[in-house]
Length: 311
Image (tube, rainbow, N blue to C red; front, top):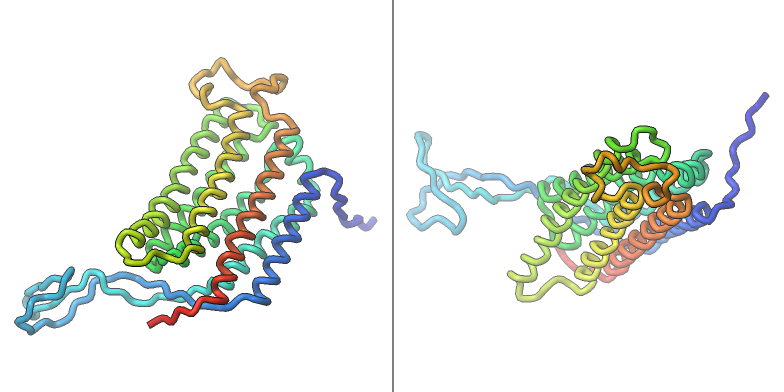
């Protein structure tokens, strides 16, 4: 007998929200390619260059002279070479289309409703975030003036690790897990570690670069760059706060060292209820659409009118 293909029928509120968001991401992706203006951003690698030095003039600032058996060399420890170029247009298209594809796939999944209502988890969400959120922070880094390879690598790696830690916390707080105490302790550790990696990427790299640029420049960055950096920072924190609230409702952090307070499935104060699971899912989906839409269109609109010429 031939198996009948699964055809989703969105009957739950969060299923409808998911399909609306998938359509919104797809619309953003298509329109990005239609009206976007492709501009390449160079990514540089820093290295120490050694050049023969025979001049009697003082060496340039921030460089030094080394005398060896092969002669005298001028060393520039901050020389740069272009490694690659990144297209903001295609990066923005990528995080829109990834969100559309993952949320569309989730909508077709047979387990979607069960995972949300009975288990309170959506593992695919963090798999998608590990790609789309990483690309988004790379975009923020580019428009904030970061062009060093190692800084980009740090932003991308820390964002990816943050999402994987979120995935671990999500799975360890599965409502159907039998052994709850140990797994939820580890889940809390994963979640709190995720705040460290996320803030390291955003505050330690992106915001640090922004504030140094403002302090050392005669004219600060364009207003839209400032808005994009801080609005996305706020929206990113909503993702973390959303998971924090869900985990706290399932097993409050102040019970971390109280083994006698093992969560009881019959106690709604310590176990996430179905209504909260549904609400959490809708907050995640809505915030993802809002964050990516705002960031994508702020960048795309300003790329169209951007008249920069790279020297």
